[in-house]
Length: 373
Image 1 (cartoon, rainbow, N blue to C red):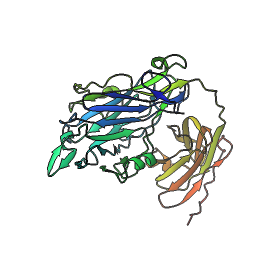
Image 2 (image 1 turned 180 degrees about the horizontal axis):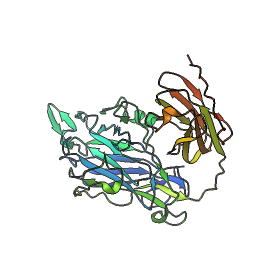
Image 3 (image 1 turned 90 degrees about the horizontal axis):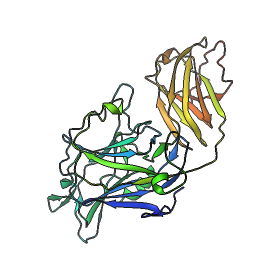
Image 4 (image 1 turned 30 degrees about the vertical axis):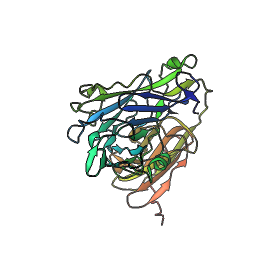
């Protein structure tokens, strides 16, 4: 729940800090301490100067948001470019807001500002600036940087519908935040508070979750490839003062939720192991989801742990790189909370997993699923 919050008082709905050319506006959401999938607020950036003048595709700048007090990201939106990860950046829609009668045209590329790292379990979000802010606006054939009269906005922490509403039919470089693959992107900020040091009573400095920004130059290396964030080679910090304490959440004490275990099982046909597992939650799922697959004699062939689902959310997990899946005869999904699961093979066959006895049978007879037309 979003609480009213303004200025230095605890009971207000947003906070704003200003540098020479960067305004940062956040909203503050109430979050239940101890839970692993809590929604935090928005982070909006307004550029009013040439703060990213040195950025280019070859010399990008990196804007980071760091979650404080041992709070981590609850899901992966942009993974690393590795065998295990699927690196698909998110292009952030940016729009021009002007106060004059003859404003310049926005000339930002769609990939001018991207989310390039957002991984579950880490406490930092990485944005990459790929285009000089000197080129973001144009008028009569000449480019210019944003200014107080012609500001450029972009934001994270919003769903696709909100992003479309704010950018569609505006002077924007895109109609919404989108993955580079073209799909609209949900950048709602969900955090894990199971190990946080946030308090539930006291001043906002004690109960508030801050997301602190920093800006680094092009010598930064490994952002999109390092499997462990400690392997990232930090570049030189740039002399931009962002202020302090950009709060996006406030810890509160909530009742403990009771979750029943869901165990979904189903057969797998003979295949080359290419297909997709689609998971959906009508309510809430507590903690990670475990997927295990078995051979025809009920011996375990492989298992993996998937990230928790958003409340009333869904996600598709491609299965092509799951080890030994082509030899599997059945698959089982276990989670705490309500869960639905559907398998779609690449040849078009699909069926839903059923709630069954969590113990695998002594022997599995593999049926032939009926193709749905």
